Length: 112
Image 1 (spheres, rainbow, N blue to C red):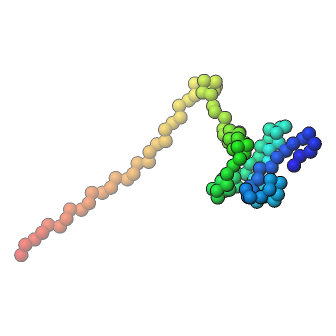
Image 2: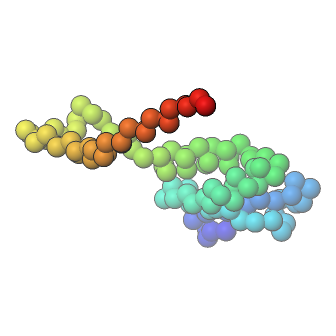
């Protein structure tokens, strides 16, 4: 894939007994090293890894990079703006349950 002086790569699942450039089972992503654009279908990657596939060293590094890209950026609490004099939020009132009536006393036993 790619053009002269413009490389791009496919991330594929393939049988290890096949030749490198032969038919592959499934394309699960792509990587453009010039723009550092990485696209992976993690659902399908995890499927193939669960079926016994082994990721190459390069694909392992790409998967780690993809995971870092997808992770939400950490929030710096010290740099976060503080809201000035925010009014306290009212607590929700608890709905009071109706008082349960006491159970009736058992009938008294009579002897004959």
